[in-house]
Image (cartoon, rainbow over all chains, first blue to last red; front, side, top):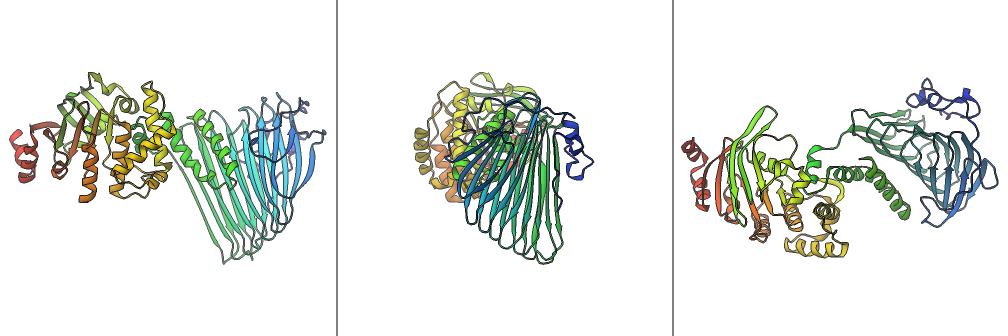
Length: 347
Length: 249
């Protein structure tokens, strides 16, 4: 399995560049300054964040530090809702943090993870690892809401236990460079994986959704649906890779990526990839990049809806298919509202 | 009400309408009939403001206001409604959401207060029942999986909710069986009013047995070549377009 990079903001030699195959569309070294000062501590943020309405535990990193000042932690989740907030309030500078999460055997956990950027031109790097013990269920919902000139990387490595279930929905709104990277070691053995993503990009924003799933054993499921749009001079990157290793028979893996390219200056780089080394598998992938249908737009406008609102309605419906797959009802409603608001600002 | 004078319209390099003139006074229903390729759909799309239909000469005024200067949504807010020959499907946008968005967008454009959810739902329920539509259907994606008849009923429901001043029905009878045709025609007839004009565009006379027009116009070669009362439609049905078009030439 291609291990994700070990990014260390203190050491420019660890910064990936486009010469690194997995980073060819997202040149971190070019986007980030060579020397990054540690972002200073700031007044502790108000509790809550985008998912404040959902009751649960909250763990916050403010400029990369926890309430006690640590930049790393290990957490065992026994069940329920866990809010995980990475709040940045910095102009220039940067932070890095590490978190190891374990979903206990049989636990049912909702993780509401938010990247809330309030400053400018900062560099953020979060490294997470997830272990799902046997039979654990974890739904991870990630909202990336950062300033246009920030550089932000979130890398996660996930190991699934027997019969466990990991479901992820990432909503990216881009930054100078925003990368959300998830690598999953899938043992098969009845474990289920959902790896969804949405990106909504305008201006000169860049977002990169990269996933690698390795099916190492028989009888595993993966379902991936990513949708997004890029307008203005924005750039979206979708890299989805599913590897089915020899012996991982009865693997059922499906990947789809559909995108809307809404401007001549925008760019979408999509690289869906299935690498199958087992015989008895059911795998499929699809990828489309298109524009909004002019006839449908006219139909909506002919009913009195202004063009920008008509476009928002259509794009919301387009990405809505991904959001429908969020299982937690309250979280789904919050994500839908977040997406609707973003789209209105974009179109 | 609607006054079209010397309208010339081109799609790309091809001129389709070549000096069409037509007046529809308030409260009247006028039918526009014509052979395939005469420019019937071009007329309806041009009035509704579809991009790509280039007006090279002429005017089209609604109550003295130049429609051709307005974007499609602004025309709708002024009271223009086109019932599409082939209504489009919009997956992921429930019909009920679409209706409410349209009603309130028009109200906003006219500076009127939005319709609240309870009043809106009550009105939609009543009008859907009149059209014998299953209300649950309105929770599905607009027109997605609807039959031809259901799509046309959905058009009439939109029309009833938006209460336009000028109704344009583009080949509304196409793809309808006789029962669906009757329901749709009843829906249209229920909307006849002294301050509302209708333009019924059709190839066949059949629809005009149910929606009786005050005037019938024959469109051929991009112009109105003959006009008359409802009997003209029956004459066309008997004799075909060839003779009238030849006489006019």
